Structure formats: structure tokens, C-alpha cells
Length: 416
Image (cartoon, rainbow, N blue to C red; front, top):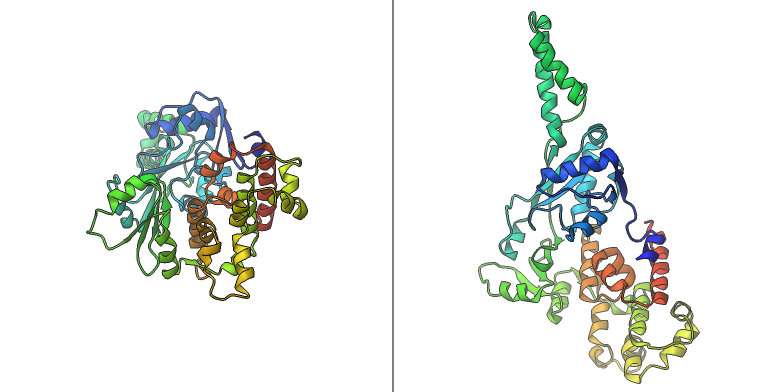
């Protein structure tokens, strides 16, 4: 991971905590019933998740209370705009952006001497079956202040009101109570410590619950797409819910998504995209065994790429170049069948999000495609970081460097 760290692609865009901020973080963990970290210095993302603490606890989702209850911690206003590195849902970062948009000023005030624990509440205590996910239509975000500072503000104001009433300004007990509150919590008058819960509407999304499920709700039919085959097999025994069920590797899935205007299959245009070119090169790297040139040089040179392609067995060459061969031959023979020339994985690769989708829906569908055919390293990094980090370590150093270069190039194009 050293190369990724140096390129700012791993552990980047984090807020470093130490001293009093680290102590506040531990107090927030205690509020969640989580044992404190022994680390003196560590970093957190936009949701308060720390990669160092996760390693220490050997648990990536240590902030959550089960799969249905997602929590977040805000220690610093610097968390605003930071990514969520280990989200439980595809909408988690959007929720945090909404929190900072609604309460940015209050958060700056509160985090001067306190912190916030957020509960992203779907009003479901626990998930018992995947069909519970269909009930996700709203999310209420609730807030708890460290040391109940908002309640202490109300108590302090009550002491002030009592002090100002009648002749209580000469009452030593009232004096004592008010001074004790001020010494312990400071002067809380005029501070913005009250954060009302707010509700967000939820539509289609991805959740890591039940081994990973895509919930598509904004289309002609409701669709659940599973990553885990065993959980999918258990789900198809249910006949009480009117919903389409698929495992991500089912051939029928793509056609159903096309019929529901989730995907489009304009294969000729897809073949001309940088994404398709990256996928071809990724498959080539998976097949090539020995080269006299660095992989990064081969992949960036049209001539070297062709040279080494011709060293592969003919069947592999046909698989990698099947899409081009099909469209070339289609010019003279309109009766050709796509499946006779194009490997089934490449047929899946050529599908893209339907142009009618909103931005959030489009990103969700790219995430789905990255899981169905994890062959584009740039999209894997963008839409499925956990999978990307898992496979990155298996690549050769040459290919790692090439992938990092491509991610950085495309980040610039995307304005990331």
C-alpha cells in the first residue's frame, strides 16, 4: 500500500486526531459501547471511521451496532467534505454532506469543546431477512452530544433564570450551582448546541448487509441483486414479496436491467470508451506471463501491446479482441451472432448505465457493474474501494504503478 499512500490513493483525505481530540473520540466510542483505542494518534474520515483503529480492533465496521444501525462521529469541522472510506450504504457520504450543509455552523461551535455522535436510523432495530431492505424509504439522522452538552446548556440556563428571579442573586446555593456549571462546561449562553433530527428520503441503494445487496426501487419493477449466493438461494424460497431477485452473476440479470431502463447496451459506442480499453489491458495483464519490457511501457505503447498480444495463444487473443473482430466482420455479414465472437464476460463489460439515470443512480449502477465484472481498475477504485484494495496487492509492481497513474489521470478529468 506504500505506493497508494504516496499517491494519495489510500488513507488520504483524513483528519488526524491526537491529544484532547483523541480523548474525545474515545469518549464517543464509549457512548456507542465500543472499547477505547490505545492509539495516541490516528486519523478519521468524514464519518469518523479510522483505518488505524479498524486495524487495531480487527473490525472494519466497529462504529456500527449491527448491520441495521449505522453510526458516525464528528470530532472536527475539518471532516466536512471528506470521503467515507468504509461506508455501510451507498448513500452514507450523501447523508454526511447533508448533515454539514444543515448544521455546519453548529458543528463548528460544538466541536470547540465537545463532539457529536450521529445515528443514521432507518427505524429498523435489526435486519432479519433481505426483504426488510425494501422498507428502507426514509432515514432519520439523530444527534447526541458528548457529555450531553446540549442538556447541560438547558440546566445552566435554568440556573441563570433562577438566579435572576426575585432575590436569588444573594442565595449562595444558587451561586454555587451556577458557578459549578460554568467552571465545568464554560459559559454556554448563546451557543448553538441544539440539533434537531432530520429526515432524508431513500430510493435505490447498495448495502453491505446480507453479504452485499443492491436495492433498485425507482424502476418498472423492484429488484434485489445479491452478492452472496447462499443468501440469494434462501431468498428465492420466499413467495410473499413481488420483487425480482437475482444473483450478480446471473446471465438473466443484465437483460432484466436493460428492460427496466437501468442499463443500455450500445456495444459499438461502449467499445470506443477508455473504460473498455483499460479492461482489455487488464485482461491482457492477467494472461501475459513474461515480458522483456516493463508492463507500464507495454500498456502505453500501441506497438508493444500488439507485439506481446501476438505471443499469447490464439484462443486468448480471440477472447481479448473478440468485440473488435465481431464488429469488423459484421460489416460484411449482418447475420453474425454476438455470442459466437464475444466472450460472455466482455458482453457484460459492454453494458453501461442507462442515459436517463440521475447522477446518484448512475454511480450506483457503475458500482454494480464493477462487482459483476471487476476488470476495470479505475472503476474498481472509484466504486468499490474495498475490493480494489484486496486485489491490488496481487498485482505486479509494474502494473500497480500503471494503475495508479491511470487513476490519477482520471481523477483529474473528473475534477476529483
